[in-house]
Length: 246
Length: 146
Image (cartoon, helix red, strand yellow):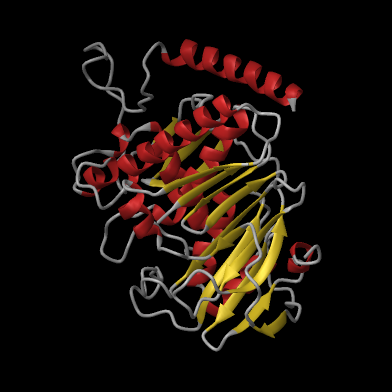
């Protein structure tokens, strides 16, 4: 899975850009080593094996747990890092959160025009090298290859996250029904003020199935585009603010 | 922007100073007072541990400015997090959630059709969050300097 970073600031030196790239990739490695449920020695794995107690969580782990709890309450329980198997998997929040934190690193180094794309979740700030809003294509969820897009949007100072089931099958679970397959919506894309917000709500909205787009509709400051198994897309009422510049 | 940075810096300094005064030099903020630290004549505080979390209020350190200003305070009662306060949160918008029963507007629908791929970025669940973790170690990094 590629992480793509594009730095479009003209006035920033190459040296600073290189330093910036290095810093954020070091940060992503740090995140991986702490939060990967695939790594036995990661903090989250050691929490799940009961080696580490709540009071001894690292600061970032405490923050992620607190943000996860906040999200669980805000989504009526549809977002829940406790899996049906009884272990914690905060990846539905950590992904957007860590991309957002990486963007903050870039911002603090003085960069204002860039995007970070990690696994299809995007934080885009400022404008592209042509001085326009960043243009993003939403993939066709029915196709395996990345080249087919079905919708184009342009964003600026936004985060965009897509939650879907088509790539690896059902990796998502409904906290209320367990691992029963989720079939009605194939993908939902959420655009919000930053990728942390977009990701956590996209994760919850996807689990909600057909109601997910209504949830996003009622959320101040967020727009969404849901695609169902028949190739019919439904968008929130303000979504066209991101399509009118195309 | 600069004002915000300066203000954030002063808030950061003030909070760190306050925390330093309150908690001493310990990096880790622990609510549980261990019996080793209390004098024998003082009663040991009773800490309820009924649920997943130990009761109390715990406040994360102000996150190092390198990673951004965030400080989270979670209040735990009866073993559950009952409130999460963001003492510093790098969002300039409130996420106001209105989940109510007003009639939903009819949302626009369309059949999806292929578009030309003339875009800066492609969004999609190219991989699940699990794959993000799996492959992050060997992530293929493309840094495009424009």
